[in-house]
Length: 433
Image (cartoon, rainbow, N blue to C red; front, side, top):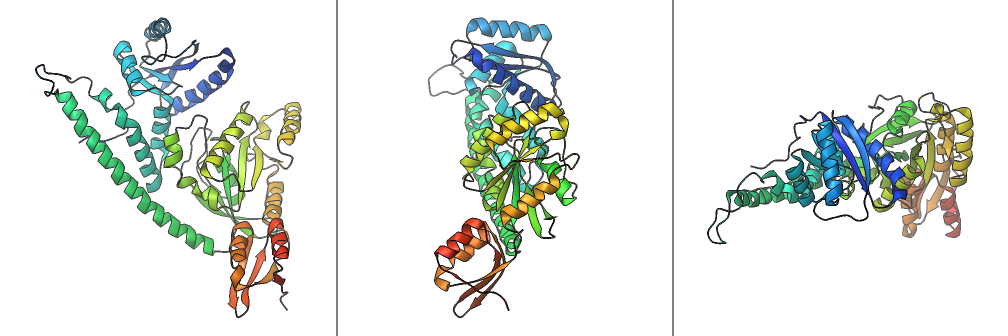
């Protein structure tokens, strides 16, 4: 029976390749190759060489034209590489063609990211989501796995080779596994939804950490909550959402949730596969967008994160930008970057999770954003306006809720926007005696 398993990594040296159509794309391609180098290194594969190739147009057979194709093959043989890794997406036929000619393993960025995710997934849900993504990726590539078997035995067109028969069996098995895995994910998602409902009953606001991978989200969680969640200077150090209780300067408590980091050119199947995991961002009262200020591509990383949040439907959430790792910058560079980033977001916070500088200021701003810096207020909301209670729960912080004859009496910390809405609807405010 065909199974998608972790491939044994016997290769030692990789040749990284990016193909661009215009010269002005070269700088960005080199940055993406640096990122790809880190991803490949995380799998224990050494890097022999990196190369950006410019072409006038792409070709369906090998992506490159014959001249560039032969040039790359010569270079691969010269440095004795075991694997060619494309930063571009390759079609199944292009992979087969390259492997047939080069006699080495040929993979693309998608497969590398899938392998990294598979190595880091811990919870049952994350493992299932990675399994689903890998199954869907492997389905159109089964032909490559059976290319060593005969395709035709001769005779009539109804006679098929053993390779063709095995491919059809494997395709059916993979489709069955995809269906079964989706069912498992739905069941696990139900369990997680129940757990989230239970957590939401606790009158604590939730704040979700989002951002590019390796921006320092887990380090910030550990700094604020005094926890020991894995935080390492590598891409996708943690995949599973982790929630911890944090105490703000006024003594009030919040739930802080770390989520999986984003990355440029993230395969769409992984966005879909991790949609359930990233749902934490959709139920949070506030999103902290953590950005690595020391990274030269930090502005592009910001755009990547915001684009994925929009794809998830979280663009309407209030987002507070947090620029991290300012301790890694020289004083002059830091001041210049602060001025530039203030133009992008005047409310942004600058800090260092490593040294702790600026963290207390961040917590004070979180209190203000959530309305927790103000005194608790009591409201009597008519039963036919119960949606305002739901809004208090989602957009502010609902402390208590008691049903009475003339309405629902609540104690809450409403957001500024919701305060205006309560006034507009003329909901009576009653002060506790």
